[in-house]
Image (cartoon, rainbow, N blue to C red; front, side, top):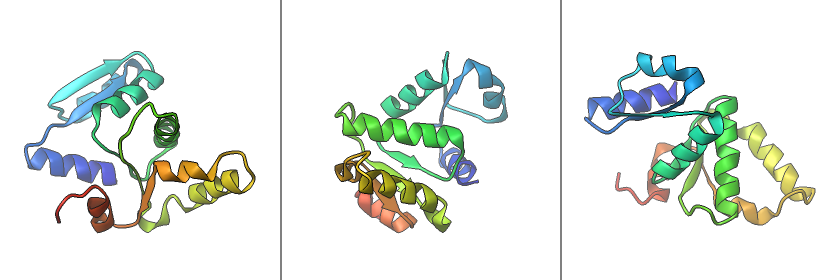
Length: 136
C-alpha cells in the first residue's frame, strides 16, 4: 500500500525510518528495516509516541489503527495539546465515507464545525506538499 511505498522511498533515500510498535505486534518489526525502533506497552502508548515524534501527521488509507490515530490526533489538536499539521490524504476517495460521518457530527451538533480547522483534506501529493509548504 501507500505506507509501504513511503517506507521504500525513505529507505532508498537514506532517510530515518522509526518503527513504533506495541509488544503485541513486535514481530511486525522483523519484516522491515528501521533506523530506530520504539517498543511500547499498549496501542494507546504507540499512538501518543507517533503523534509526539512527528513533525506532521499524514493519514493514508489504512484500517482501525489508522482511524484510532486520526481521531486521537484531531482531538489532541482540538484540545491544544499539539499544534502539528494533520492531513487526511483522500487519494482515490478512500476517506469519503469518514468525511461524510464527520460532517454528520458537525451538522447534528455532536461536534463543533470548528474542529474542521484541525485538519486538512488532500487528494493529491502536490496539494499535500503545498499545504506543508514543501517545494515541489
